[in-house]
Length: 150
Image (cartoon, rainbow, N blue to C red; front, top):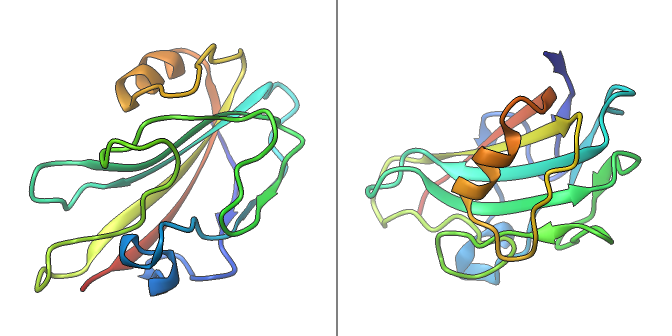
C-alpha cells in the first residue's frame, strides 16, 4: 500500500478544525490538498468520519469518482465529475463536526483512497456502499485527523 500525503491549509494533523467548517456554521468542507497519487490510481475517494460519536462511527462526508489528476479541493468544493454519498445527517455531501456540547474533543478522520479500478458508485451512495466498492481496489491511502469540540 502506498502513502499519499493529505493535509489542509485550515488545520494541521491532530489539531482543531476551525468552527467555520462545522455543522453549526453551514457545513462548508475544509480545503484539502494531497500528493500526486501513484500511476495505477484511476479514481480517488474521500471519507470523513467521527469514531468518537455517542452512536458509534458517524460519517460526515463521502465523495467518490474524483479524477486522480485532482490534487486539491477548495473550501466547500465538490470536484467536477465526483459523486457525493449520503452522510449520517441524511444529506449528500459534507456535514461538519457537531459533537455533543461538553464532550471531550472528537476526532475527525479524513481518509483519501486511491483506487486501481473505478468504484462504480453513484450519487447518494452510503458508507457501506463505499466499503464494498473499496474491496481489493485500494492501492494508496492518506489520512488527516482534525479535532473539534463544542
